[in-house]
Image (cartoon, rainbow, N blue to C red):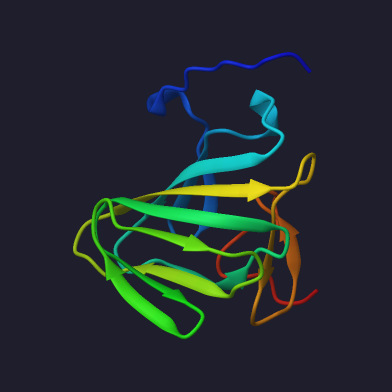
Length: 144
């Protein structure tokens, strides 16, 4: 595939419901020709949480853009505000929840090996799903 250049207006990004009011807006994905990153913006309503999970085949960077988000990585936890960021190595369990009094917005960027889709393994069920697939929902699917 040739060189890819895309301007991606927020209001034109697709909206994908992930359950419990969480909405994801994919940004740079294979659809745009990306082969090594997968990114998106995620809206978290007040009280919503992404359950404990890991990404066996990807590193992840999360930046809070709006609101107050509690992020737990392994046995460490921090309450993050706008522009606070994390870096999470592959296969490290993590979760995050909106603990503020307004909807939160976070940017998530995954780095993957060439031509691999990012996966999510839910800690509780052990089920692994492709990020953005119909099974990538919260709460997590019941079983593998």
